[in-house]
Every structure is written in C-alpha cells, then in structure tokens.
Image (cartoon, rainbow, N blue to C red; front, top):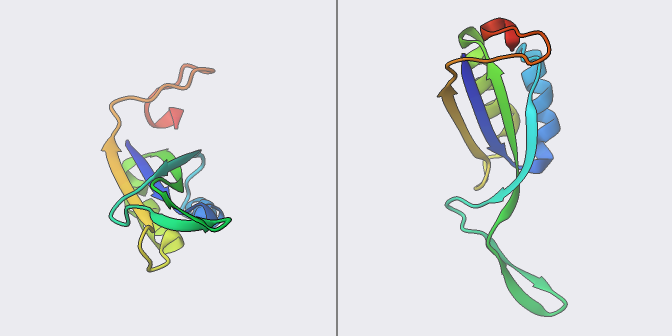
Amino acid sequence: MKLISAVVKPFRLDDVRNALAEAGVQGMTVTEVKGFGRQRGHTELYRGAEYVVDFLPKVKIDVAISDDLVERAIEAIVDAAKTGKVGDGKIFVTSLDEVYRIRTGETGDQAI
C-alpha cells in the first residue's frame, strides 16, 4: 500500500479528482495549503502599494491506494495537473505499513 500526496494548483483540483476517479481511485482527502518552491512567491500591486506574496495557495491531495494502482494514479495526476508553467506542483509517494478502517475494524487493502 502507498500514500500518494500531491500538491497542485487549486484550479486543477476538479481535473485531478476526475482523472483519479477514472484511474480507479475510490477516495481522497483534500486540504487547502500554502507554500512555495522554486518560484519563491511573487510581487503584487494592491491599491498602489507593492507587496510580496511569499506563500502561494495550493491544494494537497492525499490518496491511500494498493500497490497495483500506484503508477496509474501518478500518471493521472501528472496529466491532469500539468500546465507547463512554474508551480505545477509535486507528487510524493510513501509506503504505508498498515491501514485501519475505524467503523468495521478492517485492515490492509480491505480498509482502503
């Protein structure tokens, strides 16, 4: 089992969600986050005053899936989130030792 965490631009969320559903992913957790990478934020003009926006709004998508869906899910995220511009995001894949479903007590792949 793997945990895929993807940080993408907020306006790409619906595309990523639909692509993951088509890839066979059944559930996900979405969190609104702020951060920056290589782009280091940007400057904006508000009422004539210039200010620096250090942390840009992003969306973090967490998906716990079985090993056989990992490559398909990653491809779906990349295809749906890619704009070709700086700040498209990152995908992190980590191993899950165990998963528990609280309601039924199921564990492992059955709990996903």
